[in-house]
Length: 520
Image (tube, rainbow, N blue to C red; front, side, top):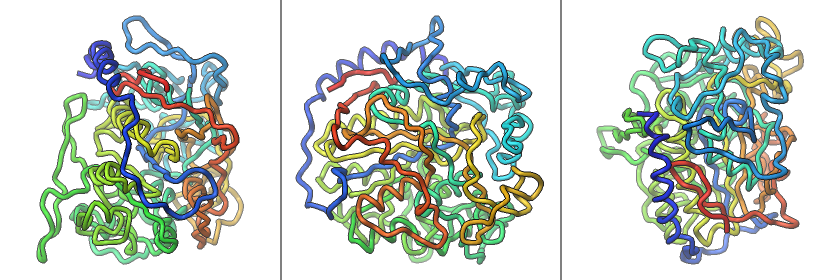
């Protein structure tokens, strides 16, 4: 089935051109009330938070694609496209791993999920030699689409023939080749760092499930479902945080915001005696079905102050972004309801339903591409676009190979650490005395798409997941979260912007192929 997607792409591209041609007049939205003053022209930030991709896995050969015979789409970069710190510069022929990096074709868009736990990722980095990935994070075997590579699958990468949309966005907007996960580890630490810059402070009172391997001395290093969520696993939940997050700061300042996630709307509403049920499922482009909602991807459900345990709907479309019974936690449907009614929150976090979040094992680059392009086409084709910045980034690397060793911005010395030797990550003291936050972790993609983004630009300054909340804090004049949060120490996303002489245009992409339909 996956191979057929490539064959059908050319037919769908022609259809997409004619369909989009009727949509290229800007769609006006009802005028929204003026929000709090900002320090930049950006009035709306939309964060698209995707799943499980290392930088080299998606951009290792950027901007050069193989363009092999029979593959659609072909990819050609713009003139004067800057190079990145990728596999070409790293010289794949000298790669020290037991297998060299290799290209995955568009027809190989579905793969095994790699091992991306806190300790295996550090062990793969091997004291900075970056040479133990197949032994530590690689997965493969019977029933797993590894295309004959076994555990060496972790060395696989895609190019612009598969990750076409993201490569095209990089051509017309700005991207980073030096952005990292704040810490090592899987989805939950990444999600917590995105909204709080902090994985310490897990309160330790677990009502169900064994959190061994997920929590170490009060610090989250693994995945477990949130305590404040009816739809969490009945046998593997209980994790909750005592820290502040960016939602708390936005509430205090009276700034509208929301987290919008596919599948959040329950299929069975909660009652006084029974919890809500999130039973919606969808089928990916390859024909496999998966639940829409993943509780441990919903970052704000780990915090009492910002959770919506029973998945209650907003009291009205006009209330989306404000504090009511939904408490800023919504389904993606609610984002578009607010969008269409002149009520777009100042800060929106978007999480795709599982089949479109890019996570290996149940999603793919082509499924993800559909969600991202549909979202951005619609934002660009609206009156919100002139004051909007969209940030695309990822929760973790999935264990996919990346050749770049990050700086050790925060040390740790626990039984789960290994990057500097058994029980060690760096040789300094941990930030705020909180152990178990070894970082920075693996390098991840990050793009900024906005009228104010630099055009065809690669930023080399160091950033991490918490740089997103740092940028939100700066733009709206908010304080730092404090308590050891990385937000006060993170790099600056505004290096990717050009506020003095903005020149970025609207770039509409085909939602199947990722190819350019129009530049306006």
